[in-house]
Length: 451
View 1: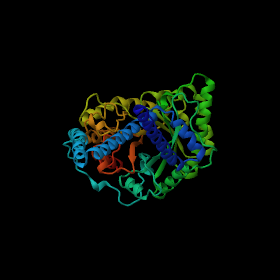
View 2 (view 1 turned 60 degrees about the horizontal axis):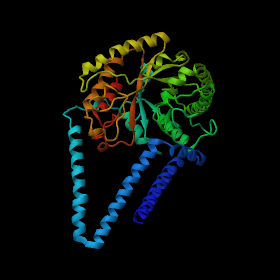
View 3 (view 1 turned 60 degrees about the vertical axis):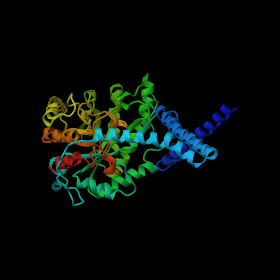
View 4 (view 1 turned 120 degrees about the vertical axis):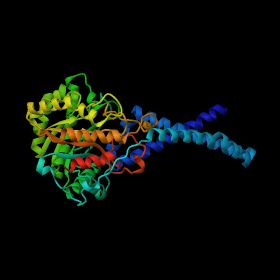
């Protein structure tokens, strides 16, 4: 009887937790999409493995807290305040203090770094308007930016202060997994959703500060990676591309409407590039009837750019430039710079072959000691527990990048990954992520972009 009652209690808590999470997510979706689109997104989400794992972890935490609270209340009712306080101290507070102390000790050890960087404020742009070096040398001083709000004036002023002249605005198109028959697409091409309106408003604010805009839609897969999208037949590939085409024509209209100067027609879609070269050429021609700005495609660094058959139709050869540069941690500046030598030869040859400039549509380094070994790797939230923080490695990686590539005529500039407008100084103290904000890398980028 007791076990049956306990089972039903756990089931109730599970149902309340699951329903609460769904209502919260639906509310967030409704702020950006229509009701029907939100329901479809929610339907895809509840079959996502990572989402379900997260929900069950949250349930276990909630259920654990319930059991603990119930136990403390029962002890208090049966034995009084004194006994309850003793058991609470021994069974709860003491273990939590030990865990917290251990956590803080590990974080302190891994986050402690003797790196004395001298910040140079003299190169910062305090005018509030970009200096527009692009009109002189044609180089994109870019940043991939996230965290847009209803009012972005302060965030844009900070970007301008750091000599960022181009901003990549990145809408995400959802695809459930690598085998999904289609990617999410708008109900009607050119009909703006709530989410589109946020991007339109943001681009308007950027343009008011004379900041150039690169509209760069990405596919975000719930499971797997967009570069590994797979279908078994031509008919399945055609179905997928029809939905992708609809989304890209929609965003081409948005780019034209907002005056975005650069539009990226795709990002890291290796398997489609290989399977459907003619579809991509047709899409480019359609986009050109809608949008009169410049075009690029973002090919991954690991050889995808060699598969692209339509570089001649675009204005830039776009590279997601997460090239491995060293094979050991904590490299010095010269070692990192030397790692660029074979890459430069390849990129220069690619540019000469197609007679197009190379644009790094993404490039980024985390602030950990191994940032230049596998730059593309993401770390979990708990990375600080097993990886060593290194603002120095991140800063040197960007310094090497500017010293080795910036002055080549074929190099058209880059977009740093990534800048979150909601970041805070305290939030970055023990983070091992790509963001250069409030780290020496921020000043190195500002200095490189000031030239």
